[in-house]
Amino acid sequence: MLTDSFSNPSPYQQHPSNLIDSDCTKAHSNAPKLKALSFFSGCMGLDLGLEQEGIETLLACEIDKAARKTIQLNKPELPLIEDYLGINLRQLY
Image (cartoon, rainbow, N blue to C red; front, side):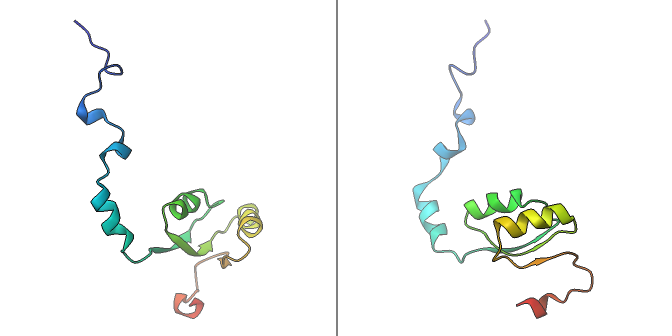
């Protein structure tokens, strides 16, 4: 007899949000905030997702002119460089 896995999900098929331990979440809330440098940024879709999870983007690097224009319009406060070659990151911060 075939069973419908959608009507009777096994414990292994639970949605990940149901498996989060509240004590684990509390422990991570005291952790230092993560920061990132974004290379090959595109229009920053990945960076937006990371920011939703609490990771701060400090710098974007994108060689494509249209993508850089999008970044400048959406995030004018974010430092933006065209190419990472020849850049000394110590000079940026």
